[in-house]
Length: 209
Image (tube, rainbow, N blue to C red; front, side):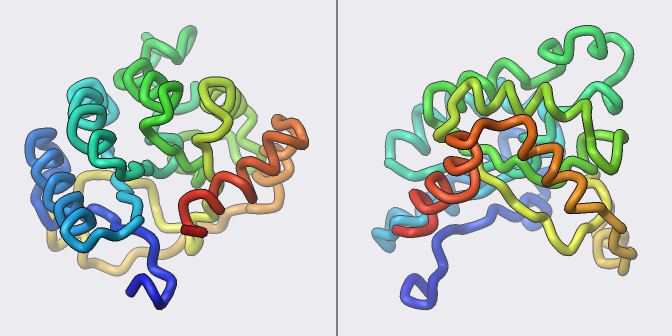
């Protein structure tokens, strides 16, 4: 698989019935981590939890277990932290108070977590330009410009949520997303250097190994 170009494992939390259980999420991460270590592969791990508050519990696990083994951890879609249009009232005035925000930012700042700036439609209602996502883009880039990645998230599936097995197996229509408008917004919020890091240098570090 490595010779074929594979460079990472994605943790399927549904398989572990771990969507709502942070301890089972650790079990899933540990199992995938073991596979990478046992095979001596320079691969990354990708995991996305819909429960952003779980990052507070996951933070020491990431530092003590994953980082200590030299394995890169990636999370998708802004770690599913929300832009203001999708935040409940008590967090809209200060989105940094939303659950999990501080833990995620500490991990990014310290170089222990890579975050994909992808799928703004999962964290914002302000399409097509997603102006309220600028805050999160700048927060991640300012925390550590060397730990951000871009992802298309194509084809565009509906927002992530906890579903029954039967619902997860049911076919759902793809979303119509104006990717050009989103990329135009994203580009306008970043310097030339930051854009190059996001689109070229940072992904090369992970996937070019």
